[in-house]
Image (cartoon, rainbow, N blue to C red):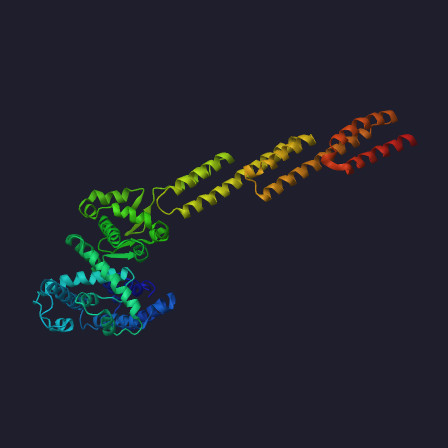
Length: 488
């Protein structure tokens, strides 16, 4: 149950073929099989409450019955599938006969379907055609169309009113609006398939019948692509599986990586696929081989996991290279110029680049912060070497005036001011220590007076940097020395 916990869910979505059910029949235990189905119901319901509707539950019970018949040796899987194929194949030949001859005079579509007036077809041919129809229904599931079968399309083509078709299906939980949307979506896919060359169409469908290929992530990306481009991309992946020597094991097609970016890149993906010739892709092996080597456009990549082929899309815009270059820039002006150049080049791109622009902007802001931090660190080292208040003040004032152009943030400007105040305090302490040292050696009033005259001018010239309070502190020290001298 652990190994196959998602099996039924993937089959319902068309990601796996119904033939994958054979995996759960390796154990002959009926109880284990029933436990698996109960577990699957719980698991699918846990994903989303509305996934297990009554109509879907009925389908799952029919699958369980098929498995029970196989375990009880009443029949085997191949026989049961052949019965399904014969039924689907008969419907195919109904349609072929209708296209050639139309409805018999006075017959209704319902009468025509029930009368089986079309020419009897060999069972082998019927099975072969039925497999194609069965595979097409899997393609519908891959596209997210859960409840439409080929019989619905056949009735639609026989001009049976759609509301009547819906009523005859006797859905318990699928409303007409949902059904109508799915039918017309399926009909467009059917028509697109019919427009392909027969050889190409049969290849695609033959790959989808048995458990040869498991496909993940196709539903999401196909919703953003034109119908022809959906099939081109699927064909590229299916052809790519032929590059694997899987020894009979199914090959997994992984569209999940492309699915993460398709919402932003769908215009570019459609544009690229519009230029990709379906005929050349089918007939020219080099065309497919180029997708394995490509750096841009649709890219096929064999993963390190066994039998996994990823289908991705790379734009010609190499944002990672731009980001790597920006992270090496150490000058603000150069960084700003490159950032604005990059934005302009992205905005000239014919497709959406908002996410690229945002990514580059984030890198720009981060790198600008790093460079300005480097400037502040260099400024601090420069401040530590300065002994003159005026020189220190001019250095800081110049940086603050240019702070907008440099790109300082408010926090960085405050940090610069803090560094300035800290260095001023250090210079004042150094000056006080110097004055204390000299005053300690003075023993004469005239020498003290001469020293005061020299200090006085220094204090007046730097008053705007440290204020009157610092002057008063030094004057008090001089008064103390004067009292000491006079007292002695």
